[in-house]
Amino acid sequence: MLQLGLNFPTIAEGLDLPLDVVQRVGESFQRQHVTAFMKLLKENRSLFSQEALAELAELVAPLPDEVADLAFAIALWLRKPPYSAQLNAWKQLLNTIDISNLNPVFRGDCDPVNTTEVTVNKQLLQRAIQGEA
Image 1 (cartoon, rainbow, N blue to C red):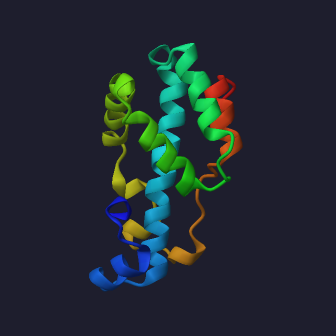
Image 2: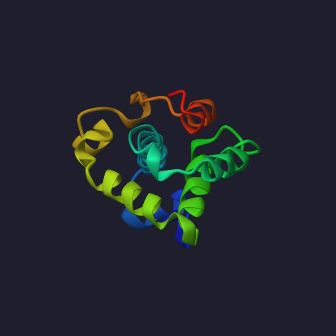
């Protein structure tokens, strides 16, 4: 929805949900996208040429250390025509993730403000691109 120009407050209002819940869920999906991409780099490295890895490294280097920025950049990169195989593999990986396990907020068994998340950051992504993760 964010790619359609909607922001978290608009989504929260439209769904009649608290803003903090919508923000946490949105951040979870962004984190999921970056995590899945790092897993793809690790488990299917043969999909990535040295040129593609160099391009990714150049793409990520100037970005701020924000999961939303990293997720958006990855999504844009994957949509370039030469990377359709990587995009398809990434989508398949995302489809294997059980949404109910993404965040306890979905199960309704915790306070969304106190939810702890797996750390995903620029440094970890850069290490995955370099093959160090």
